[in-house]
Each structure stands twice: as structure tokens, then as C-alpha cells.
Length: 295
Image 1 (cartoon, rainbow, N blue to C red):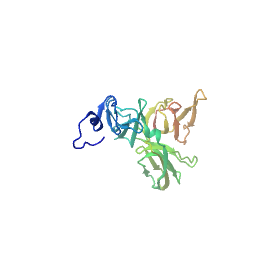
Image 2 (tube, rainbow, N blue to C red; image 1 turned 90 degrees about the horizontal axis):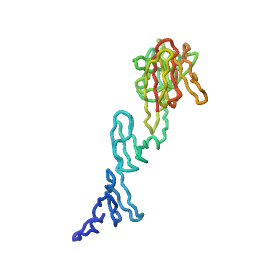
Image 3 (cartoon, rainbow, N blue to C red; image 1 turned 120 degrees about the vertical axis):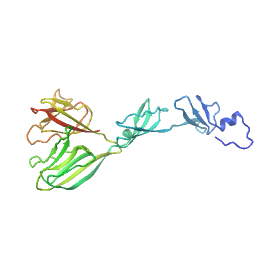
């Protein structure tokens, strides 16, 4: 769009060349660099004419939106396919980029960027006798200690800590567990000696993982089916649970971990597609349980 000069005659041609054309259809005689505000869409689209390639180039604005709570598609009315919205969530970690394509919003962040886990030596120190350590961050944690008296514990809805992974001289088990920064702690059950502990932590880079804690109670013989796909870690109040998986090659639930034996660990990590996993209470009484999901 050229500048006006002194003594320019105001003609239709110059007005088209030196102003922004507004209309629902393209101007009949476009000029190189001419701007057109296409009002056939709502909101309008600003376009500029490229005479070399004989086409109108559309300029799509990038919108910004703040959300609270769970992530959701943008509320912005898309200009057309290719509309971009940067979404900031005041209660979730990170920022997401959405693009509008084929009549639907697409989360470009999750689809286009690799979910690469980052592994860090989160903690490498001694926990005093009868003391506890709480990581305070989200992630997948793996705990190793130099003795037999350190427990990894989860907090269930009743406000009580219970073992999620127990290392004993007989079992020597170190099970990774999911922590949301508030429901995970490491406790030294030795009342006399300190224990050296190494805590490894894994988180996803270039993606915002969701950590969800579910708590509940199961009566004797009752079951609860995991209905959402994801990576899970769990614990329960007294060790009287089974974690059951369902296989496409079988017609019945298959017990994967039998935790009813004295001293056996509560269940560690398992992956569910939302249909193949359930917890089953084999105890004579009611059991409290905690499930942490990473997705």
C-alpha cells in the first residue's frame, strides 16, 4: 500500500491502492501489497495480495486465553483452519498451544513434541532414625536405601500414611511410586540407626503430565475398576488387596499381584488402558486405598 503524495488526485484506482479494502469478497482489481479485510468470516481475516504468486495471503492472529482448573479447548471463535491460541492455566503447570483444524481444536503441544523423560538424582543423603523425608515435587520416584528399615509411603484420603513399597531383608523390593508433591514420603522405621537413601526422580519434558490421586474404600470382597488409562501407583491400608489384570486372550480376571500374604508389598506400578485393571479386597474388613495416575 503506497503513501499519498502532494497533489495526488483522489481516484478509485488510487483509493484501492492506498487504503485497506473492506468487503466480503476480494477486490476486482487487486494490487501487489494491497490489504483486504475479509468480512465474510467472523472474526474478519486480514489478507495481503501477492502479485508474484497471484494469491491472497491470510494473516491469522494468535489469541491468548487463561483457564482455571482442568485443561480445555480454547473458547475463542476460530477465524479458520490454522487459528492458533496460546492457553495459560492458572492452576496447572505449563502453557499449551492449540491449533484449529478440520472443525476441531488440536493440542499441538502434546501431538508435536516428544515426551522425553528427565531422570535426576533427586536426593542422596541420610534419613535419621524414626525421621521422614517428603520430596515435595511431582514425578515418578524410585527409592533405594542401604538398610532394611526405610518405607515409601502414600497418604490416602483419610489422612493416614501407609506403606506403598517396603524393603525387607527377605524381599529386597524397591518399587517406583508416583508422587504429587503432597502424598509421598520416605520414612525410616529404624528407631536407632540412620539410613542412607538415594531417590531417583523422572518427569516428562516438553509435556505437562497430569498427576491425579484417587482414594476410596472397599468392603470385603469388593472390587474397583480403573476406568481411565494411564500409569498408576497404589497403596492400601493393610496389605489385603489384589491387583487384577484382564487379558484379551482370557475370559476372566487374572491376578497379577497377590498381596494378602503377611509381609508382601502393596502394589507398585502398573499401566492401564482404562479397562484391564482392577483392585480387589480379599480382606474380611473394609480397606482404604490410594491410586496415583500419571498421564
